[in-house]
Image (cartoon, rainbow, N blue to C red):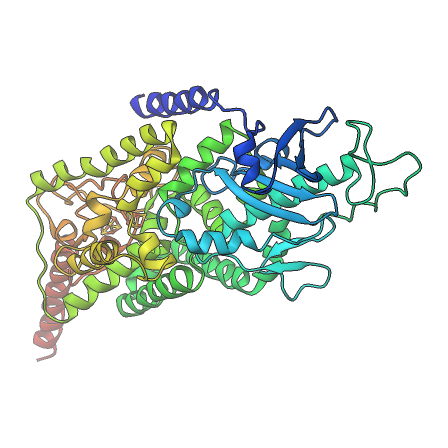
Length: 508
Ligand code: SF4
Ligand code: SF4
């Protein structure tokens, strides 16, 4: 099967790519000077934990080490962020500097100033401090400010620094001791024992506690969506109720999931997931954004049961925004314009080509993939809320505006996430979208109403493209709109009228 072959090849390429990795632990004097500007020499220590002893003109300055080697936690890109950390003999962090990363948000979206301000917060923290992003009000923690839109990146970076600092501090007896690893470093014979390590609570656990209310709301919304899907046949018969419910749900998706929770899924999540499978999968990274995790878990299940349409039609904030704009335009009397079927089908290919290009680029570097992933207007819209360079804002607004003329234009032709989800749709189990013998032969009523144009002229629904909006199901059950039903109703009414006339005639 071509799709299966494609997926296997994809995984193989990821595996091959992951086998090429640089040594994240080696440091040069130049790199060490970024955290110890007065360093004169560095010596690699022979202890269990790899670190460099750093000396200045007046003697020991402290220790330098990399998080890439001591705490390689996969970040948003699926790859660890490598930083050099300088830890003084007094047990205080002297500096943290990024050596290498492939984080999309740090490439495009976050300014150098924001990044430097964030990193500067580590300076002066103690080895025993429990440093956490946003944990200002949590007893026992030292809170630092995150960067808007870069939650995973900043959390992972903080966890890596904490973990690396702690392992070096414990191994070399910082802040009070001298080590046998190298004269002048580490715990001195007879020194006091190191403070016992405190119980480490994973960063994701704190976030799940912090976002308990939002999680509750999302879980209720997902339950409601399940109920809608299970009772879809009953619901779509009540046209007004169904349409109102759908508009409310789409508003919820845009404003709560999109703007409030910033939980728009992205093709970068998919690429990062595959990279993390081959380069250090970590549940900690996966769980660090609770709402995103729950949504992906739901997508994984719903896609196998009903296809990608459940996410695209109900839970994707950008999809929902386009849908609402298109509905509003319709209300205001805009007819909308559909491309000819042949052009429409040819244009579908664009999103698959973008996806393939993204996969290829990500094998070399997630940074380059992130640049191309800017084809997704999601970061501009829901994470940075249009507060970025004008070209990105114009692009996102234009895609939203074009939906007024051609519904969900971006979804149909450009979205690489939708393309990625389409592949898995082929394995879906249920087919609950009803069709009649007359669909397409000759009836085209549903096909004309389908905003995605996901119904072939021959009547079949194209599962890979369908957004599960259920509009064709509304028509299917409507004896005022579905021509075969209209015909049946008319025959029934005729029969009843003739019967009534016969009764009147016999009474007379
Ligand atoms: S195609 Fe892309 S933008 Fe459209 S609904 Fe699906 S994931 Fe969202
Ligand atoms: S109208 Fe029917 S075929 Fe078209 S997107 Fe909606 S559910 Fe899918």
